[in-house]
Image 1: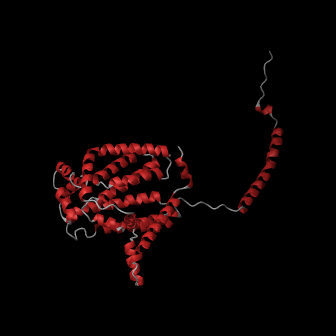
Image 2: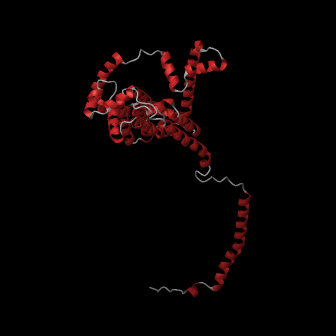
Image 3: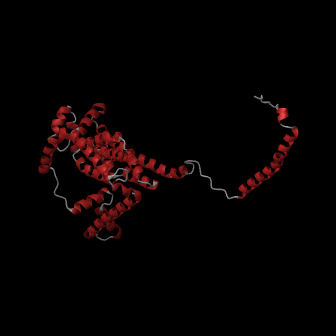
Length: 364
């Protein structure tokens, strides 16, 4: 076998060969520099794309006026709910609230069973009295507190449902200065507490539909049951909750919504079961002694208009004062016009709020 001869680096490549290899490389350098200068000049002549602003850099100044309007609405609502709490003495129903709340919880449960409402409000008022006393301000301050807490909940609902900042600000002002809400806040009765739990139930349902969080599902059940234990009128609110559950534009399809709703209804019914026998007795008692006559369609339309701020009786009297004509005989025209305006606003709001893609949720 012939041994392999290894060459040293010096012998492997002659210096003249190095020079021949380096010549092409040196000749390429001026050409590369020329191409680089040409590319840079070409890029400078091209139209520049608009640079995107930093996040929230331009949106914040535009949203500032609406944020100020919302904050001012909240402050105005707080002022309207807390002013003159002790200006008048207690009226009949407030006196009953004070009287029944001074008994033990067991006696309150048995006592209100013969009345027209459940016991939870009187349980809360009993603890409130032990903390703050029985003055007019102390008794009514619990209602004012719940009405104040309802303002941020209403804002959260408006922010979820409404897309336009101006619409959110307008909704906040309407709720903050609502005569009904201000009156409930200055009344030592259960209406303000009922309003709080009703709004909390609506917000919990919306968040559950959006996030599928079982924390909000449990909060929804508790708020609905709390409302039922506050006042029997919460039964009518359950119908509105059911409609909202079915039509709110969110990801769950109809089957999923129905199953979730049935599960929630069973849980609410189970927790309300201890009071259900008393509710049946109260229904018979109220029907005999307290209930109003059967309402007509005109009564329904009048109620809807008044709650919405379009009181047709007031508008007809105000118009009569302006033009010095008796418009009372044509008051039905104001009733129909106000109701039609509310219906048109409702349809316009629904068309604006529901995106086209949300129609697919009806599929199974």
